[in-house]
Image (cartoon, rainbow, N blue to C red):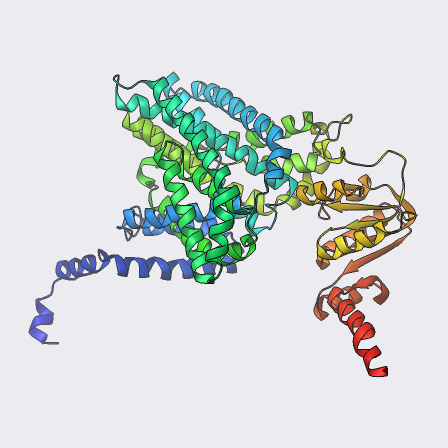
Length: 568
């Protein structure tokens, strides 16, 4: 480089050139991805959840710190596609039979929590000196929980198919419908006096019914034919699935619902397809990548300068959301007959406010109903509750174990909805099978051929329970992670408990529970690889009590085919 040219560059010129580079979207995204990998690695090192780290990344790269994020529209577009793919996958996994089984509890709990939070949130706002209008906006904003974040956390924990996970998804969807209706009202107000509010609501409801009708038609006639044709190419099946999800999402937005509802229905429409597992596996990585931009977008829109003066009231409202929302869910589900564990785990999923809350606050600001300070307050509550509730959900089982004795007041002693499908009282079982997947289901089918052997199935998937009920199998809801599981299992003192779940921690926990409840029978656990097998042997399990499905299948094939053919 020419020295005279180099000397002619002052600091302003250098900053101008750097700014010009940062304004180029490609370089901006390169910086975002590099920082995401860096801060994600730091989060793993510190054992922090990636959601919190990526929101922090958005704040660091946003206007409050480094001011790197400029292409808000592009990032927002990727975030919206990521949200659509996420909700599409949730719908893809959701069986219509689950909707039927949890519809009542989801509706009652969802509406009950919305009414409770709105009422008491309003009273807290008045007590803190906010006006009636401001208190009303704050209260309503506090009622909505983040479906996107909860679904992501439950998916990561592989608990989205559990009973509490399905109930949580159910009442989160109820919340989404409520927020949609509220936003319709605000949109009508925003459009002015010439717009008929009732007309807009009726129009949206009719459009929603049309969307549901089209979903039903797609399930019966369109999807089976189209998916079979597209499945001839894995790439085309993936492309069709993404296009279907985004199209449904955009249509949902177009008719006045949210894009989340549309994407969710798109997933449900494909849930009956025989290709849903392939679609799910191919879209999971894409989902995780795109959701990075959702959290970056969320963090980059948090203005630290505005929210700095609202720390004290934000802390009070955050405590209310973190404690009050789970408690009301505990109360409602307890009255409906659900066990304290299921109620507690479901309740933790509403211990934060939603990204919809920030959108709702923005609409109120545009109407002149609230000020920047109130928007800052709601934003800060969102940041605090999303961050802390993430930890509550990630460590929910450990928290439950610590609080379990104090939660007895929330559990009905007269009614237990979860074990309504239990066999008659007083019936003791020779064998209990925990986990009715492929291996457990085959074992159950074999035992069904011997009516003299009383056996009981235990599973945490409502669909599996309903399927086996139809075959006449005695089965109850239960989760091996529940330290009180054996209290609900009527097994003979010297019976046999078979766990088909290949998880060494849970196998050891089962052994500890059996000692706690003075069970004198035999316990069989499952290992799917040599490492797990050696760990169980080291712990103290006998070789004859460790089931190895793959090795058993290979041995059966050898004895029935190869060995006999060699003899011949």
